[in-house]
Length: 135
Image (cartoon, rainbow, N blue to C red; front, side, top):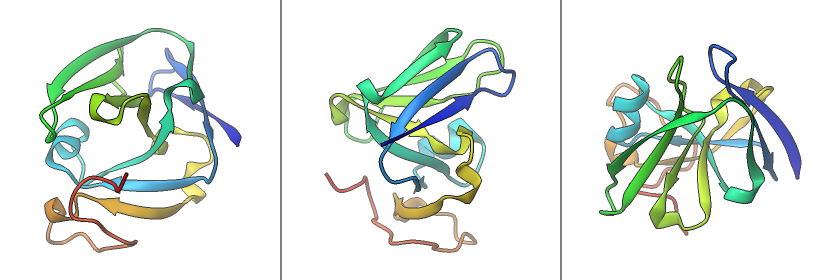
């Protein structure tokens, strides 16, 4: 496991996350598109004990996920960058935004999820599943 550092856009919030294999999971779900304003988000799923806020405080926004369970989105109260989500259906795991981690520009894409919601012009760049990640 390697520890990676992340920070929000304004620098008010910082965190660390332990990740085994550095790779992105692209999420094409409609909620990620609305929350990010982009075509997809870059993520990985980690045990919550492997994620630590080291500076600042986060606010929370909660919505109902496709599973019918709550999804808690954590974001910087100043610039609204969102370092992670807790999809309660995943138990004690967090969905961490890998695009906000130092060095992540060089990571490969391991998987694409919610391929059914991919925008028509977006190319497939890795193995794709139509819905959530396999458990």
